[in-house]
Image 1 (tube, rainbow, N blue to C red):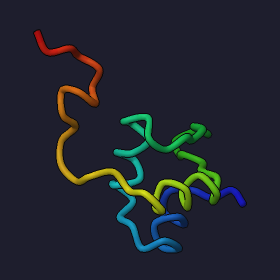
Image 2 (cartoon, rainbow, N blue to C red):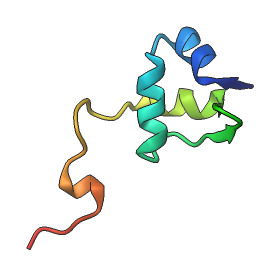
Image 3 (cartoon, one colour):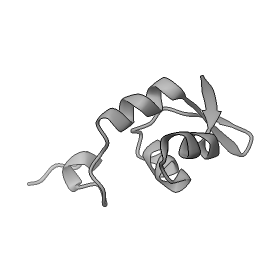
Amino acid sequence: MVMGTQEAAVRYGVHPETLRRWIARGLLPATRVGNAWVLEAKDVERLLANPPKPGRPTKATRGSRRQ
């Protein structure tokens, strides 16, 4: 099932901005259609089964190396 961030937010009880952040971080696959993001229900469900930790991404998750 395909849905927008607003519909997914209502359906899964997640704030729409949280979904947009996950999209921006590359954690949630989505397609841009005009001004809206389109999500697959299976992708949202997969991510919610093992949600990322809240807060800012650490350096390790951003891809930089510690020297």
